Image 1 (cartoon, helix red, strand yellow):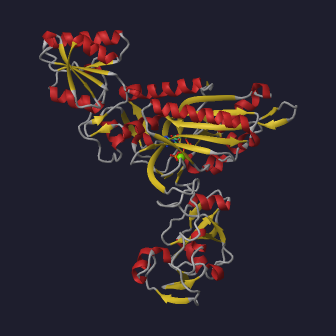
Image 2: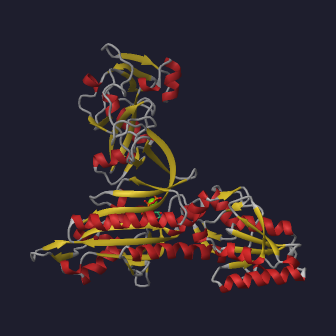
Length: 566
Ligand code: ATP
Ligand code: MG
């Protein structure tokens, strides 16, 4: 391909609102352009990379025995009502009407559609197991579309669904996808880690793992043990509850004391006012779970884990109560809530219950109580794990190591659904003994477009992108230093056509630009191998440089071609 003809609008500067390094680079290198928030066009270079990613995904899915289909993006709302997700999915689900006022959605995922398809076609255990997949555009009206392709509202996903006759079968299908995912991410050049995750709105009773690409921009926090292989999304991360180690300062059981704390509402203000560590306080937050108020109490140095709370309450929706509700149930302005005198369900974290005593809000403006002790004042609370794990917590798996924290981008997700969808959508089959039973399902997603950004996030330097060979838009960049120099152009053309003939995708920078501009663009778009044809062209000598190395090798023509073919 001649660069003079390539639609590759590079930019010197990225727009100031592009926060993520990958977003800036992809705009600057002319891979994508934004149409609206979270909605992008792929320009030729971006499209090429995307196709390579799709191809790797396809090969590994096929290799794992999955079969490719393509389902519609436009889905009747009725299906979503049948699975009861029409409401639960919330505002992320894009809803629309056709000319007959029938309701439709633009699919954010395809559990409903695939289950409806399979229920009509599969009716015997003899047709199982079966895994179907597609690579298709998904729509989610994300609250905060951002970071370019990392969180889009229209994005490309590979979604696969497995159907089995029993749970052992599901486990095999799941592991086969899990292993395929490891191969896919390795082939794409990503450093990834599979972590235990929360089931979220997809639901289902089995296990689930997320594949996280480690990156500073990652929106997910991963807790990993420094001694064993335990790793989990912070949403889900557990820890071993120690007997002593989570205890607050020991003290004798004392009478409750009413403490005057004017305008002191936050833990750090309390820490300053009392000269005590944050672990001496009990932090009370008022939430509404499916509309009903509940109080959650964690130690002052801990954070509430809303997913754990939501799961413990089996609630569909959990949010911090608005000020009015919080004031109504506590009788005090926010900042003074505490367990004593509350008439709503109280959830107290294990670490709070392990305290001998602590300071908590008094449900009265400008007052806290001292010497609140769990035996007397939290006797009716529901005990549980309601807090986020923190660095240094004891590993729940091996009990030896400590948890460390990392940031990651979720690029893939594997999920044991069980019978959640086959039951609600009535997808049954006859098992070996002739009894009707619901299909056992799994679902498996990869954010193919997100993957593109994740790779750039992990593979760049201050000059631009550094593509792994497996997904680079072109493998070789041939650059004549001066396009006006006939000897240079002739040799460059010769090399480019030799490489093309050998099936190597080659970009030839035939533009009449200054060498500095050409090299800058070349670094920016990050093609793995660069062959520069300069003043020794007449002798057949060129320079070869790899994008990820600093060394420049002077080679003769044949050596350079051989190196590029390797
Ligand atoms: P997240 O927690 O990041 O919102 P999710 O749990 O909603 O992800 P899934 O429903 O499991 O994601 O979707 C499967 C895969 O699709 C994810 O692992 C991710 O790689 C990708 N994905 C999800 N939402 C987006 C998005 N808004 N933009 C790009 N890719 C996405
Ligand atoms: Mg999401």
